[in-house]
View 1 (cartoon, helix red, strand yellow):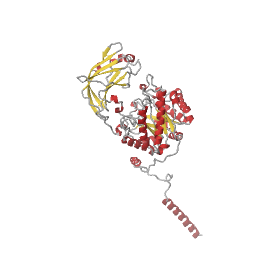
View 2 (cartoon, one colour):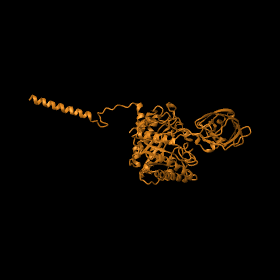
View 3 (cartoon, one colour):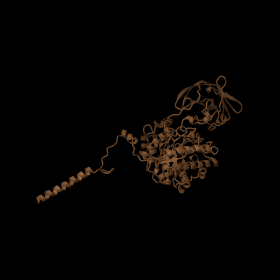
View 4 (cartoon, helix red, strand yellow):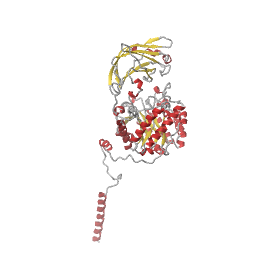
Length: 560
């Protein structure tokens, strides 16, 4: 009996030993609860990601546009980074020697109205006589703050250089419609200016204009007699991509930044991109270093499992070359198609996480936002169709990639929506419509952007929520109910020391977005936003320190 008991113990011990050996020799499956994972130090994470060669970005998932929009969840804009441009992108007539530009405002926000002079001649003493009609001053008639200034362009120094410029103003006369005139003493004399980014600004302090209403000034003519003692001939010098990426006070974009966005709860990133400073004017060829840098950031997004939108941004808009303009359509459309052929070809290998957006807020020649003509609206439809056709022809993953098309100005008023035509496509259910919505405007925007309207820092639970709901209902009835998916590619509110109200505003958009299956993208302009009380824009992320300036708003955006 004792012998049998001992044999049983030996058998049990042998089984335990075999089990232990099997457990030790056979590796556990990845993700097992019992598996001990050695954490990767933070300083090594970047190297692991950037050195990764096995990252597979080319396998295309068969996903329709509606499902893709829902998968994005909530989006964030990498604003004021790759969409930035320098002054050499301005029209040729103000880049040439002997051209000046008047800054005429009558409000607390300088430089809001620009008007280029005609080409001027100089007398034997080197003085140029400049005359401007002030009829384009924009402000209310009751404003009691006057300001007029001058910009002087010189591209000899290049967009990154700095140089001192000496000017002497001999005469500065303001002549009114009744024939009377005054001398603007603050303009007179010798002034030393700093020329930066190819432009020098002369902007005197408040002077005698504060005694006049805007209505009076709009009938006046300003005459200046100016001498520049060290004006060099203009010469264009291109800069590296990093110059443009940091031009509007944002740091270089890093994988850590994009990873932080993902970890905070965002599912998609829109990267606004401007090409105007990066195109060979004779061939329309995009600079290779600009495309290389864009590709790096696209890979940051895809490696972090984010949907990524790229577009043509400030190539359209109030200072853009691409317009809703029929008379210049043939020339502009060739350039537009050439750019998208290059972009789509370059990035055709990337999978469905990369989405192309044809253009941003396109306007007509007069920068009309609310009341474009039928002709203007027809050009937008033509450009959207050209965009889709051009991308599809590049082949590869672009034959089935989801694409985003936009309305005139990315607006959503009844006239614009009723004239919008979804492009025809050779594959079904791959097109998305984008609009932008900064509603209610008085709450979202600063007073300087509201014409004669007063800004508000209070989000009204009833009235403002109703307005936002009407926006989503309009988009649902026009598009979503007709099986056309929609994103709001930009929305935001400017900081006015009202974080709680802004969080309610953000929550309203996200809630209605989920209800109506419309994904919303917060416009984050970034910039030097280390001091909360100094922020004057829609910046949420301190990109220098990777912290949220207003975590309450981010929670409202990203809370499930």
